[in-house]
Length: 191
Image (cartoon, rainbow, N blue to C red; front, top):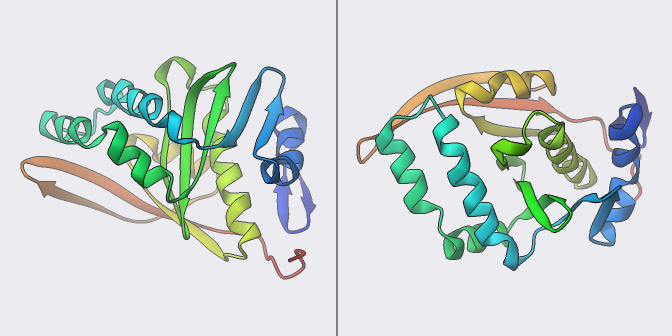
């Protein structure tokens, strides 16, 4: 690993993408072959909803009422309202959005990858991009709320577990794991 201006860069294809992320995201586009990570657009809301709904059958840690609750809350108007108010990036393959994630102050949230495109490094790239934005904002750490079945993914990215809780909303039972990660020191980043 190489440390550049307080940001950890990893070797290989992912490292090349990360090293260009700050420069290219300022122009609103990060390209890699035919794939890219870019800023969220209002027109992405419907596809982002489709991705969340496609992930629901895989969320074995939720009861049916919780999956129904998530499905009902993920409508394009509401999703667009939320995602457009945050630092949100999407990963596309060609013209198709296949993943997205957001940063709300120091919280990494809404990281979803279309099930047909999972386990290819897209989630890692999205989370790393959000972390780099947090470093740019001079944040000392980020936190997130994970589903239990995604904890191992975040542990591999350097997050640690703070606590676990289960809560119920209208019969929908949610078990979540609160996690956090310290970020590289940012004092020597240019303003």
